[in-house]
Amino acid sequence: MRSIAALQEQRAARVDALKAIVTKAETENRDLSTEENNAFESGRADVERIDRDLRNAQFLAEAERRGPGDPVNDNLQQPDLSRYSAARAIRCAMTGRFDGLEGEMHTELSRGRETRGVMIPTTVLLGEVRTQTVGTASAGGHTVATQLAPLADRINRPALKIEALGATVMRNLTGFLDLPNLSASGSTAWVAEDGDATRSAATFSKVSMAPKTVTAEYQLSRRLILQSNEAIENLLRTDLGQLLAQALDAAAIKGGGSNQPVGVIANSGVAKVTTATAFSDTTADLISALEVDDITGTAAFLTHPGVINACRKIKDGQGHIVTLQELFHNQRVETTTQVPTNLGSGTNKKGLIYGLWSQLVIGYWSAVDVLVNPYHADVASNGGALIHAFLDADVAVRNPAAFRYAEI
Image 1 (spheres, rainbow, N blue to C red):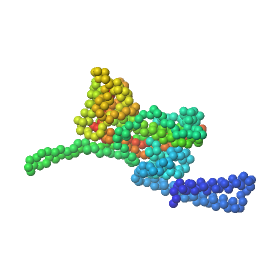
Image 2: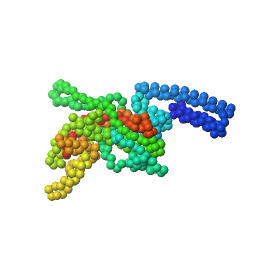
Image 3: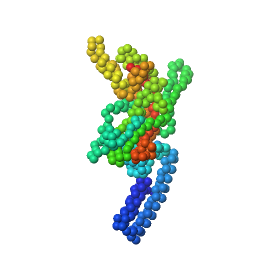
Image 4: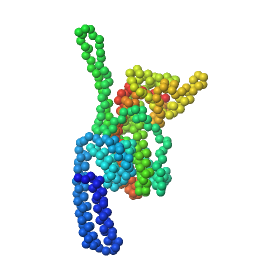
């Protein structure tokens, strides 16, 4: 049986041919000739046959999608994604006609999953509520033009650091996930000749992960949807995907809020180090805390840019600037405004985290599920659409002893 996309393309071609026959007769203000009538009847029979084949193909695809199976790794489709258009996927969802590469990816990524709308690979898209219109320049008007260059991204986005620091990423998860840990080893003992070995047992624990949903919403005007091409593509990829990634990155740093994953700072197992009078003493205590717990590996600091700004002003007794390398004891330091600035009893302290970031696990349960809603009261009367994007993910600190933080 031919694919759904091929059947849909064939049906569209047959319908266009039938329209052409009727249009020609209407233009010439006459009835269909015998030859035209026979061609029309033959074409109509073809459309009815294609409709039967299409219903059968859609039934089989839906039955296969709802059946149990292994998750599809969307990374396997990476070579084909150079031709993928997120904007076209949105239009497919609006028309209900999924075809081409976007339709194939939607079918594959939906297999074995419940979906709300059109599935877009996380490699294409990875909230802030705003209305995108043509009439207002900053709300979408800049994206509609005769000649249009790629959309310029905002320059004031928070830096995303968690994956760059080495967090463990797990994709295409299904169901709940338990990460087993060896929390305590057995023991050894020296014995005399022919002595009995001392019995001991290792202790195991686990960290559980479950999908949590982060969402973003856009409102697009009818004219923007119809007129804008490359710009709306860049809007979806650059802004919408960035917002979802930003939310997950912030949750990994702290989290713990309503319906959020529990990140490093909010994890009850991650100890807080008392802030010393001298900044370099605080960083030394953070490093020492991991060393005392026998945490080995490449660790790094993560903090807010405001902390680094204060560090650049630290001087020694002779008035000389103390270098960042000295203050952080030659350890790697990364900064992002995603680090909270409302810590402490006075909610005015910034976070300073030191840890082995490979012990932070980020799990993805889905591609980005995009639901297009043209029927909402806010858009139904003007032909626009609401776009809701959903991403199912979670964060887990596999070994809390691998992290410490201080409030600066």
